[in-house]
Length: 194
Image 1 (spheres, helix red, strand yellow):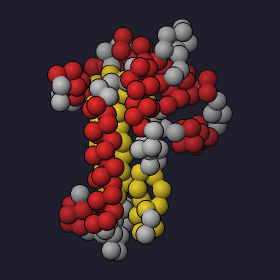
Image 2 (cartoon, helix red, strand yellow):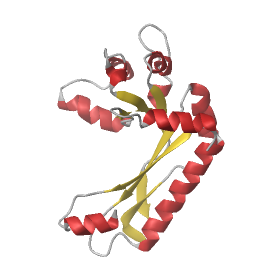
Image 3 (cartoon, one colour):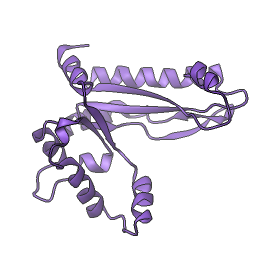
Image 4 (cartoon, helix red, strand yellow):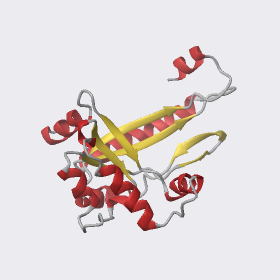
């Protein structure tokens, strides 16, 4: 990894700090807003995220923020891009680049993450918009007979291709194989799958 990527990666995992996931899709954030009786408009989503990003002292605890496509393009109420707001507060801007999950072919009880098509071009654009790191999530379910080796291999391949493309484009990849704990399996089974 080149020195610039290494520096960003180290800053993201600085002791006592964490990464804020503000990459909720429009559908997910709408559910959150609905739960409090608030209409989910683009301006309200922007205001909500701006409030999070400008909270006094946030940079003492947050090293980076994962943004959604809509958010990386938005401007704060004072006209500054939200990416600049983060950077000026000492927080590293990142971007979610996967396109969500779909049923895995030949194994419909398992999932594969989509988004490799066109990823290089999106990474170039996101880098130009100020993203310094990216996130890709692969969801692994536990159940009778799953996860299969096939599922693990397909998702590992996608994660590796994503990470390689990120590095080629000067963006630090966050590789997130998310093993879901839900179910009636044992803790030992979860450990082994993980």
